[in-house]
View 1: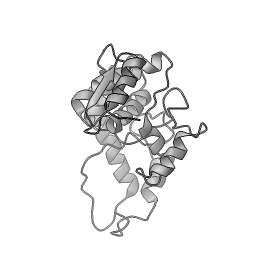
View 2: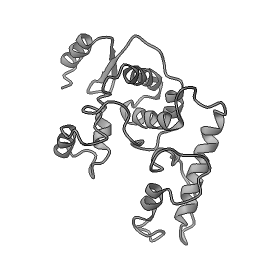
View 3: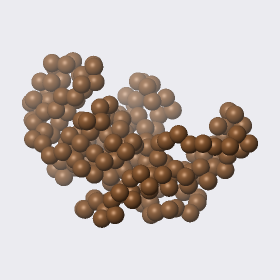
Length: 207
């Protein structure tokens, strides 16, 4: 939109990061990341009111997801649901597998295991796929998004999850698994024990 001259460069990020607008529902997170519902929105070519666009995204999140859960999420907060959903969106390419991965994530949180989700360390990179910068992030214990070095959830969502990821975070699948990885074809391979997980790493050459 900035390239087309519809908004000022940086205006959208400023609103999303500062939460500088009336919110249609309470948002615990320090930014609006995770609540900006991913959808195709019609905007006027004459110019875009950034706050109006962001408000529309929040209203769509409320309409498509939040309003479907008037009873809340039990012991989990909306913030926790959204953060987990954002990780599912990046971690598992197949929506059908996301409830299983969600169950593993929650189980690791309860047991105070590190999540070890590489996507969180990529979140703050200028280039998501820059491997050199990514390896630096993985070794930084002060990075609040480093889920290898730090236990618990990252401070914010790492993207804006689809409805499939949000619902998977709400309804995780119970299983005997505690670990998982993906092979080169992005096929999910869960494991019950660290020994099984390490065997999968060797078998599918994931290191």
